Length: 437
Image (tube, rainbow, N blue to C red; front, side):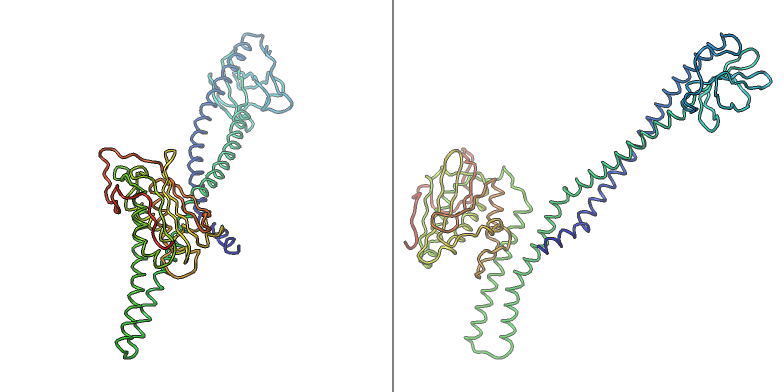
């Protein structure tokens, strides 16, 4: 538990930092795009607002110019005391520059040189859209504040933009965490695998080094040297087995299966051949080894023949190691419903529930007894995955463990040749009983 918590709180150094960088990058991109869109929207909206205001001002000025001097025919003026709430203000500017407000509460119009036409001017510190027409030797000026309209647009854009950026950052951060989880898992498993492989390789190397040091420490008899060499040879064989298994797994991890290069494999034929190979092991261990397989040519799957042969060998070897004297190992291959099922049962102690999810991990051993590399079931799992099979792991009727693999049944065409499938010929007996009963 403590290790799990420590691993969790180390995440900010890796996954969280990576997710934060992804989120910041995504937020920056969205922010830039949002800013460009806001500029475009502002230009479009301001243009529309300006056009609408100019239309209202032109209408007011036309009506005012046609009315009696000094009167405004349209209700205008300050509403609620806020200049920004006033729809339209109208001023009369005489030829000598005297300004008279024709609407109640109009702000002070700055004195300047007037010319006809619409323009945006600053009135009492606010942006006004004003239109000017000549009238009675002077000018009529109509103006409407556009500061509130533009300000409202900018406020809405700021609120929505901030909300969008917050949602983008949060969403990108969560997605970054979820996306990096498999990467982090692979990295962690790779680190664990490297550590385990180093440990497994270091053990036989340490034994070899110790044996050599002892042998060279003093003169010994030929029999003693022979014993040292035998032990070195045993550890060398173990070292070679580990290296070969690691190379096999490396090839399995690095290359995706090519459907065009797969064989149509007779699982029943391979199971019979494997049981025959382990007959001597059964006799030596004083346990029964039997096979019950489907008729030849029916239990066909499309897979790599060498891989299926390795899979069956691993499962039978694993069962033989745990059967025990007087026990039994049963291998069965059945066909039904378009499926081919390989089952290997043993009478050993079985696999505890706590270890069933770990048995396919590399270098995992549920049984602490010496022997093996801890890679056999990992290789078997790689073969099953590469051949699109499915695992089922449980308790066998014999009392031990049951390993079961299911594949979709294949059919051999005229061009499918059984390449690389060792073992008996298709005419061999489908069921055999080998080993001690």
